[in-house]
Image 1 (cartoon, rainbow, N blue to C red):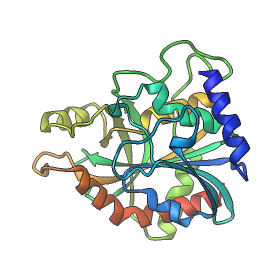
Image 2 (image 1 turned 45 degrees about the horizontal axis):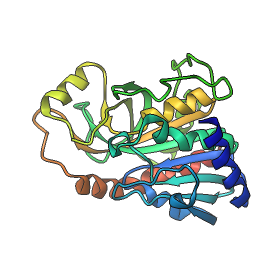
Image 3 (image 1 turned 90 degrees about the vertical axis):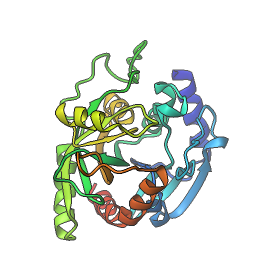
Image 4 (image 1 turned 180 degrees about the horizontal axis):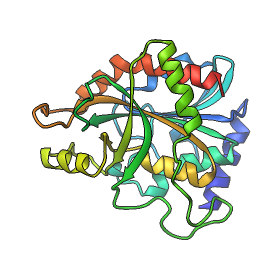
Length: 270
């Protein structure tokens, strides 16, 4: 793993024209933030040594380096998922590379299904904690001290400082936000009604198929994390309807300007 991380980081350092401290992972239907990046340099995943290639519709598959406002950023437009057949080491490999490139703060976005009965479709949820139900842990196997400690503390995986700033930004822009716990599951099926009830009973507010592995590895790497979900469907008894990936993308596309505003202003304050 160390050799691959170093090989990929060395390749990118030879290509990159600037070296940001802020990384962004853009999820389903949320790639439009990339259009706000100026002076951009784009590198296709398929040209990067050891990088997986995204196979999911709505995930473009390229690194974008440039400026969001006056802040230099490195954005992943398209992420990798466990359900695509990748190992957890492959899913989280880009976060390892980000750390090797000097990233200190990571902003993550996703689309998720709300299981909190007070949530509505189109809500923006600031993630305050997560529950990991993936069958494979991204830190399983030999630990490399160069990458992080064997038993990383996860009591504050999501930065309270960044959460506080984001809430103030949302209030300033009269954007409704909610807060809650994100549950990560393997997918690719959407949940059954019984699974939605179970996830709610064990403490989840939303459920999705990403984010948790990336956040675990970011925390292991010493990277500060902020994450948000767009609630694109509801897993609440009486409100459960048949859902498709296309519908999830549609809702995410409608709401993403609000998330973009919060992310842009938060980055400006870093």
